[in-house]
Length: 157
Image 1: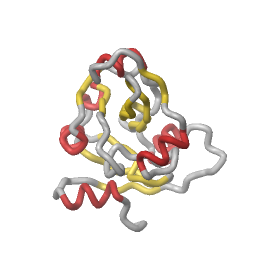
Image 2: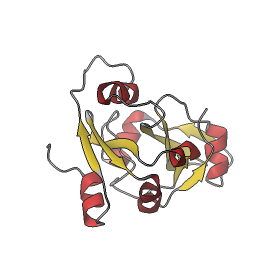
Image 3: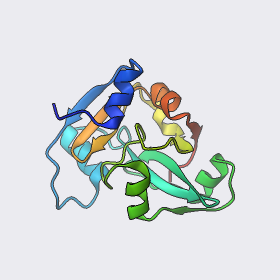
Image 4: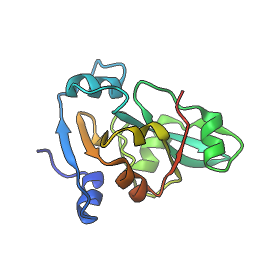
């Protein structure tokens, strides 16, 4: 297994059940999340991507299935704001400590307001980035919500 990431360290330090899944990332992949679902042989609705957005001037996290997009209007509403936009990728990397395509909702430099799409609760476990491209972690949605202090909302379209 690859070396621990902040995401895996957070899971371990909180004694949270998880399974790590690795695959060979192809640099030519156009969608990191769909690549993960395909390489791991999973339903794309069970694999979730972590997106960094800005709601009313403050950075936040949206976690949605890789086959979906985030509704910025729904994200703003879920986090008690009025206006949302996607964050600049360079800002996302600086703020989270992770590279685009490997941003995990877990173990970021700072705990940001987080919304997880309600589809996560349809699965016993979901897959999110473990903090590197080609490196996913399987967790229970309830554990992810607790560790990120997330709200559950209908934010995927």
